[in-house]
Image 1 (cartoon, helix red, strand yellow):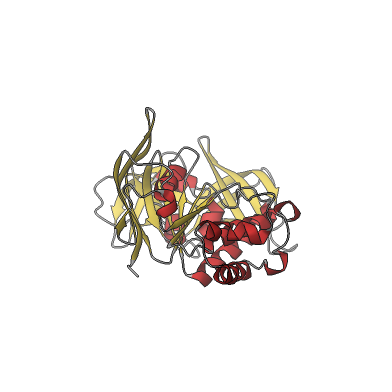
Image 2 (spheres, rainbow, N blue to C red; image 1 turned 90 degrees about the vertical axis):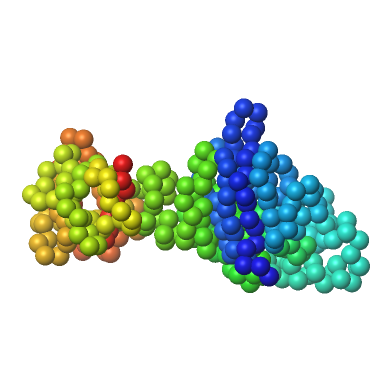
Length: 365
């Protein structure tokens, strides 16, 4: 099998006068769980439909396992799309829903039964083969739709917001199940979603899209911890932001100052890759990377700035604090809730926010 399962070359797609996909080029590796993440209107579902053949690009080329998909209709492409609504036939049993595609291809009955049974085993629904979709939970219906895609042995499974119809708890369970099934069958999965946790939990790699373009591709850890743009940082999780100016540059770190917060010395941050040409930067800090203390924790952290607690939220698993650093700067901190004896802070209390150089990311403006 080729190293690249799906390759998109300079795809362009208009919906009327709206540019939905803007010169998009992308490679998806064979056997990986690849997610396309972005807000509504980013172009991610259009991209998926282009791969599936349900829409035709105005420009560019799509290759699946090295073969061009130009003029290849959806039913002849080696891909299967799992719709957000599952699109199950309500009058058919689970078995017949999964078998439908094989019947259309006139697969021999013995082979059909064997393949359907194997697909239902994969998704843990062997004992419910005679049920109707209305007799299944949302998670079970989702697994039937997945089995129907897998039974055709496609090169690629396309997932369009696959867990969007599920409640939060079931959604979290199905994230793990989907990834486990994908790993078991070894087929390339391409999933589009606007749900950040979903993409980070399931994916080997993630592409972040906005306005029809891919802004960054990388592992979940790379995209979350080292965003290459403010748009990516704002979309993937929560970030605290601070505008500043570089005053000194070292080998792996640099120091910045900001007119927006009072500090006794410049802030130490890790140096971004590449040449440092601009001196105006944006500092990004994730709320969970901050430490809240009543003293500056001298020697323990590279940076400490004074702040005042404006809001306290108890969520069970963590304490969330909204802190004012100056008239124009509000930051958030999230601390794991380690028990009743953990130090807690009150609204109005003066504290220090502390962090190390490696905890922050700076982007040139």
